[in-house]
Length: 315
Image 1: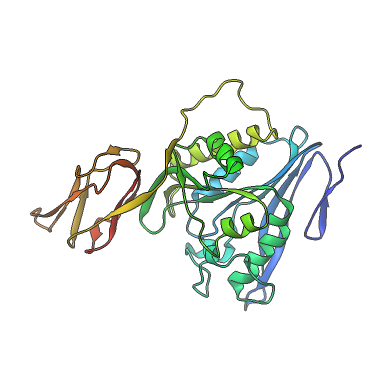
Image 2: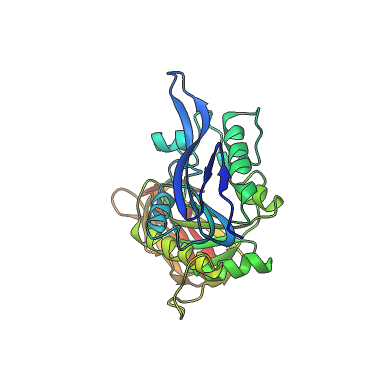
């Protein structure tokens, strides 16, 4: 029996085709409509329904390029199952390069949302109803926040067998067992029965090539592991390093940061990672690792205040 067409919003997508559409969000004071851009690939053969999303934080642009490249390599006539891609969730923040919405709310703390709530809550509700509710697996793409860069990594519940299997298939350099935050997309989607991987890589407002390449390869490997696309016969990647906890090294003085620690570097407790200096180059304080592990994040800010997060180490 042939597959049925796929319904989303007020449209239906025929099997073996792809279609771009817009889901209405709100109207600006100018009268212009704001919509959520969506593209659906509806394969000819049965398979899982999966979503990809990026830019829940409007300044996190790496995932937008990851999704563009993944979709460029897909043929709906050969796809098994259905893929829903939402490259820009926080449309208003994305247009201004802002992490948050105009009301200063964090969209990734507003799920599952409400049809009658704040703007953030309404966007979250729309995403849950039109995307998450139709899917069994999702990949949520992020970058480091303001002036921080992240090593490509998957954050997920590694104690859940299905989630762990998909995290291993993604094969980012690191997979980190991460607690679920209330109000996040990952938390709300899991409550609906979906399996969610959160990908972190690169810096905000930048197209970091290493983050894009690892993201594209990882998404393709997950789709292959789900049987949606054909994958390589033999693994072409190193397995992820599993980490169970992480913590930040923080500045002990205010100063100019001379940081030697690199993303992906293995460090030992007490190892020198850099120094805080004054404007004449005089050393104010050395920066040392506070645990054994691997560097999964670092600040890119040259000026730091006492207490600022400098280096993120996963154990």
